[in-house]
Image (cartoon, rainbow, N blue to C red; front, side, top):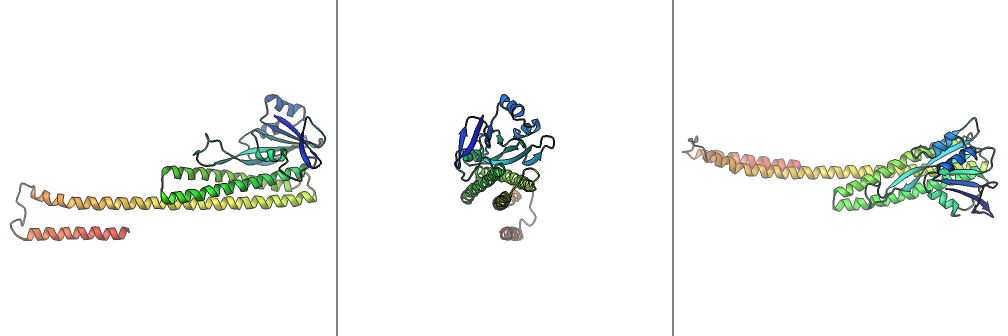
Amino acid sequence: MINYFVTDAGVVKKVDGIESGCWIDVVEPTGEERAWLRDELGIASEFVRSAFDDEETAHADFDEETGQALVIIDCPFIEDEDESVDRSIVQYDTHPLSFVFVPEEDYFITLSMRRNETVAAFAHGAVKNVNTAHRTRFLLQMLLHVTQRYMVCLRSTNRQLREFERTLRKTMRNSELIKMLGLEKSLVYFSTSLKGLESTAARIGGGRIVDLYEDDKEMLEDVMVEIRQAMEMCNIYSNILNGITDTFSSVISNNLNITMRTLTVITLVLAIPTIVFSFYGMNVDLPLDATWLFPFVLAILISIVVAVIIKGGKVLK
């Protein structure tokens, strides 16, 4: 699907075709639409192929032959229920969003394989002070919005993390631990994507991919600050999650030790009568059986065993 947008009186509105200073948004293109991008718009085939590769990592590329620039970043989205670890949690993943600059034209192109919240926000006028004719600033505004989306998703993940921590204090069921795995996957995706976003923004700041003006440089600094803040939040939440996981692993291990200690004590206690009665079940005369020494020695041995059990229990505590 291909849509065209231009800024009119400070408001982004949809138009029917390519106009001067317009923004072209391509989502889930068909084979014919991909051919149109290559043949009609003249976008390099390698750029079209990379833009619609769902596994493509964030980067910025420049084609020396055509002078075209490609910027790919990863955007956060809520993972489908059939792909998530547990349907009762909100799990996140990332998917690529691509930007293409054609030097001899004055339009701006975004390419993605699925609906994007950032693109929708710009298309519906939710983001203010947008001008599709200012291509570089438009790109930086989108990068800023994507970074802010990461922070919103990270806060949501942190709220779920606190809720599961309270639940685990009451019960340590396997289902709750599996939910923690889903949150850990989200944070791993975010951490990797934010690192790629930081390196991509830094390369844009070099000025070789796209031309930057003074105002653009100031906005790029704001973008870098937001990215670093999002990365710090992601690292903090990852450390908290790892700490919670390690703590409850230790609790589970300690509970297992207590259970094994109890079973061992019960086994030893039950073994004492068995040992005593096994002596009297023999068909031979027991040594010292006719004297009072045998019961005395047996009582001493039982006392020693009981003392060892009690002392061992205190050591395990």
